[in-house]
Structure formats: structure tokens, C-alpha cells
Length: 331
Image 1 (cartoon, rainbow, N blue to C red):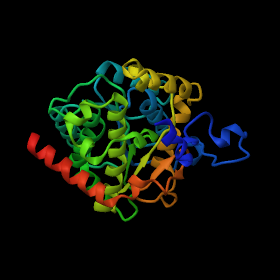
Image 2 (cartoon, rainbow, N blue to C red; image 1 turned 90 degrees about the vertical axis):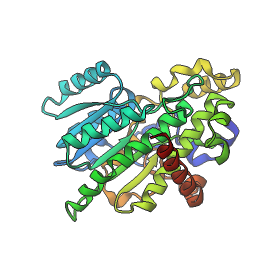
Image 3 (spheres, one colour; image 1 turned 180 degrees about the horizontal axis):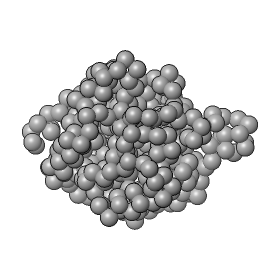
């Protein structure tokens, strides 16, 4: 995994430590400041999955500065969600921030979340698929999918499909509409197994936990690129936040000894939550003309144009069709 990462310099070296711009005190690199560069969000409705902590909470906090009509925080824990809402409102008392219960490992919960959202809002301008789990013990979702792949990919796929009519309605509401779906991936995608292994629960469960996570992150890139191909009216991109110190690392104890060592080294050069949220904030809020539909971006705003997954239309189509079939069979 580490050797593969070293062979992908654009993705790997942009993942660790301070950004080039931060390291050179603004002299080099892309300077992105959310308070300055995110465009006015007046009238826009935003939904962020996993918005109760970490990158999701920071993303909502920064977007709240720019006058959105409403932000929905989708998360499992009502207590953590309310704590996040209270914390954000301390800085932005007037922000309209609402919690939607969402467990991405349950189709029933996903459908209920989509129904709650569509009953409450007739538009959706920005959907940020931020939630995720990593390096968890071997387990399956309610529908029997490997837990990381089922949560990070299939759960978000179903949620997006259910919200797609609202996204399309928002596009049609005005010629000036700017509807976006931002999907969080990771440089960990380079550790993904073959397509056949990715789409086999038994094969995934027989693999290491980090390989299972890598499969889900590869699927995120494929999903974002295929969404752009099927619905070009919607801007769909995937982003890598960089190596970030967050709750995702809670299950490091489940990794192999070598993986634990590599992780320990990487964590010494990891970014803060605030810096880690920059790439998804960039994708969600800067001028649309700066982004390429279907692309995969590494921090901050760097198009990883040579990424093989983002260019693999055939695999993206296969994964989309496979996922639709799985959802139909389990519904």
C-alpha cells in the first residue's frame, strides 16, 4: 500500500502535513480561504452526511458563514447531532440547521431519511456525501453487505438515488442553478482489490480491514464519475481530504502490525480537521467554472487527472449497474 502510494505522487504528497501554501506562508500553492473563496449561498439548501463530528461538522460550520437558506445534518446519533448544532449556532445563531436521522448501513433508515428530507424541502443545491467508517471489524450491514463497502458506497448510492428527483428539480428551477454532489473518497483507493473482489461480500470479508476500506473508497470515485456521466446537469466530483486526524482512526487496533506501524508514521504528518475539510469545501463552494464534472480532486483543488479509476468509464458503469441490481434485490 505504502509503495503504491509513493508511486502516485500527486495524490500521496498532497495528503500529508500542511498544504504547500501553508508550508510556504502563502508564497506557493493554491491559497483557499473558505471565508473568502466560497461564493454566496443565499437561497441554497445543503445536506451533509456525517455532519455531527469531524470533517462534516467543520464543513457545515464553514458553509454556515455564507448565508445558506438551510443546512441539513444527517447522522445516526441524535445526541451528537444536537451537540454539533448547538456548537455551530453559538457562532452563527441565525443559521437554519436541522438534524435528519441517518444510518447508512440500513436501507430502512436511508429511505426514512430521504422521505423526511423531501417532505421538508423542495430543493437541494449541495449534497455532501461525507459520512464514512474505516478499518472496522468484520461485519455486515442490515442487508448483508460488508459493513464498510455497504456504508461508504452502497448507502450513499441509495441516498443519492432517492434524492435525485429533488436535485433535478432544483436544476430545472432556474437557468442559473448550480447543483453539486461532492463525494468523499481517499488516496486509500489505491489499495482496492479487483472489481470482482470489491463486489463480493465473501471476498471482502476474507480480506484485511484496510483493503475493505480501500474498496469502498475506490467505489466512491467510480460512483462520482458515473453520476456525472449519467446526469451531466449535476456537478459531481470526488475528493480526497488528505490524511486527517479524526474519529475514522478509532479502529486502528483492527489493523495488521505493519499497517499499524505505517499508520503511526502517517499520523505524525496528518492534518487538522480544519485543514482536512478544505478540499470538500473548495469543491462545494468555489466558482463552478473551476471544477471538471466527474473529476477526482486532491488537496486543495488539484485535479488528479491521471487517476485510473476516475477515467475508467467501463468499471464505473459496471459498478453502477451492479449496485442498482443489489439494491433492487434487497428492497
